[in-house]
Amino acid sequence: MAKNNIQNLFALFRFSIFPVKTLFVVSIILAGCTPSTSAPTQSVYPTSMAHCLPESVFTAEDMRARVECHPDNYKLEITKDTVVLFAFPDPVIDWAGSIFIIHIPSVSDVTLNTDGSMFSEVYNSPDGQTAIQDVLNNQELMVNILKRAKEIEGKNFP
Image 1 (tube, rainbow, N blue to C red):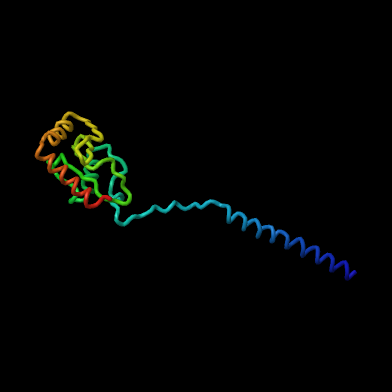
Image 2: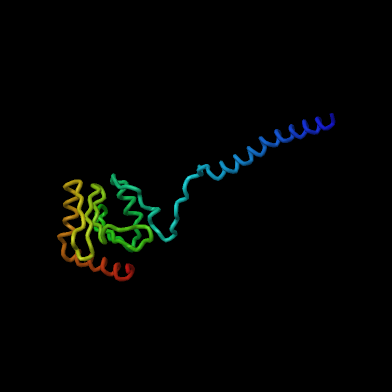
């Protein structure tokens, strides 16, 4: 009888420890296989201006924010509505060109390379086209713009 009691006790112990072992093994497996629910961490580049730029530019307000974000030493204001922005070294931004002539109210722009060749042009209104063409047709102004773009490129870009 004592032997049966010991066998019954052992059987009870064996079956009560089984669920504990099973839960332990399952929790270890699930802990290693569950996807993280936290949001991915965004890379931060302390020397980049990318954080300041709007993600897209569709309105005059977006364009003005884009222009205001641009560093002053890489910006030339022609009028309050027409500006020239120069590409500058940034670890995150991959520039489409070197010179950006922008008409803010119409969200029109022309992108030039440092040799003055046109990379792209987007005119969203006759006023925007006129304002940008006035800059492009001003030879003295364009000489200064191209000279500044080449200075920036020579100093900062490999």
